[in-house]
Length: 296
Image 1: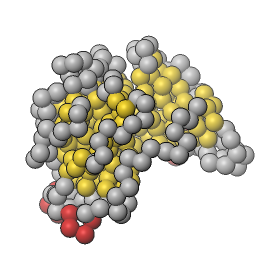
Image 2: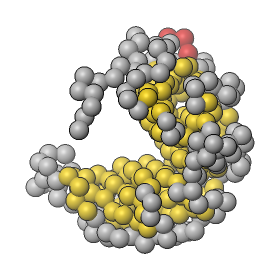
Image 3: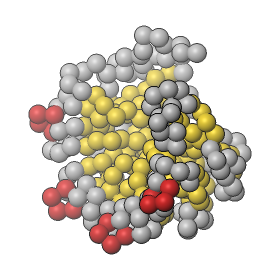
Image 4: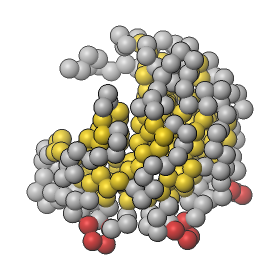
């Protein structure tokens, strides 16, 4: 049941606010977005705010989390019980190095803790579309994992999936990045969820695109950042394209969902999903039809 039929106004500032992301810290929701209110001077910036469980905006004015001479966009946010971690695409070094990923911790009362931003990945080529989660939640905090599309080897192996852990103190624990999937075909649009003992990263994968179209693959990482499924887990390899995955963790399984074109021409693009155990077993290899309404 939708409790707020008129919507909760998080930001009505001039110009566009786009690309929102949300997480829950145990007592409130943290929301971040890309904001164009200062586009003429600093390009897109990253702003955020908090909403109570009862739907009350906890601060009247959004918090400015990142501003610079060039654009910051496509934010993601995770909570670890102590703080939030916000990560975004950052163009400050774009001419020399491509788009990088920067981040900042924010306290649970909305105060930015890293005013100069944390360089999450400044590898050669572009790092795009970050997704972040925390490895559990506790009053003292837990490590985060950030994953992204990585173009450092694009000319040789295509677009890869990389990641890095960030400590609750804001230290990047994997300075050169964790190579999660670096096959000979492109891998795009990663998403990640954590369990308290590890993570599941999922993405759309082109390794069999000629035969079956884009598929959904995944890989587990333990809390030390070791990739447990180095060849990837085939989560869905149905005919035609599966793309744009998302993932969340439950008490015993993950749920992975995606857009699916297997019924193109009848119900068109649908939403399918599958449960994946914490041990890496795909429980619904043919996919669960979540929505097959007419149209996309």
